[in-house]
Image (tube, rainbow, N blue to C red; front, side, top):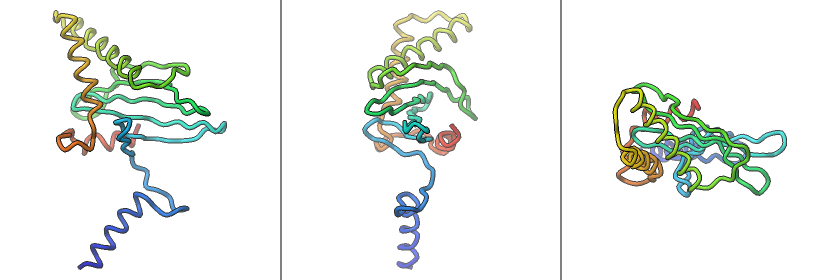
Length: 168
């Protein structure tokens, strides 16, 4: 029994962190310092690295398109997705031309994108909501995406979200 448990544990950890020269299982990687999953990493012919950074809460997903050029980190784009019960739907998107990557910039842009989306939905539904309330709701949504995945009270349903991260 102990040998079987040891083999299962070793195989599990070997697939997550294999020895040099062995391919690694392609799964999203949690980066605690940035509070996001790192997905779809690749290197261009020029030697620049790119990846998608994914943050989420129970209502939205923020996808950052990040580029590492020489010694600089740039944000190439931000996308906001909402859950419709079965899949993610793109609700806002912005592209940038070599804008420097910073958490404050990403938060501000994501909040503004959420405000624009919520304002548009309210207008279509002919619902009048104070601008301050929309702003407060947008800030709460974005702040929820910056919560640590490792926190014990993180309760988002990963069985629905993680497969979507691999598809993106």
